[in-house]
Length: 100
Image (cartoon, rainbow, N blue to C red; front, side, top):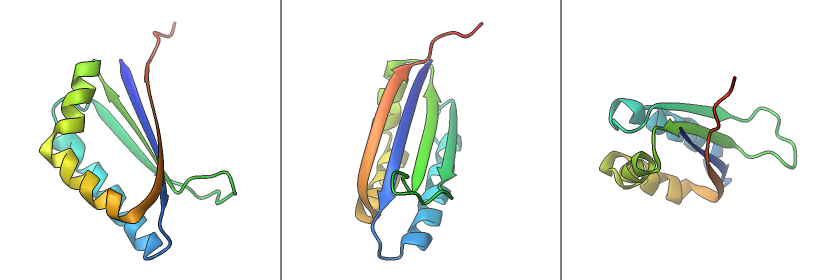
């Protein structure tokens, strides 16, 4: 299984509204993109200096499925809005090891 994690820091302008809107947009993607197995969107409540505003945790069966997600028109539409309202992102993609 492939895990895709993204952490977002939003621009200050309309920050609270944009965070909620991005969460709504992201949460529509599992029903639109077949290769997306699961998705969890979290909004930070910690507000520490090290914290990001939002995180996205999603899973895919294969790297190819992650690539399909990355180029899917529904994802690209959400991504276009995210790029307008986010100031910084961090991402990590990894292969989840089997647990016993």
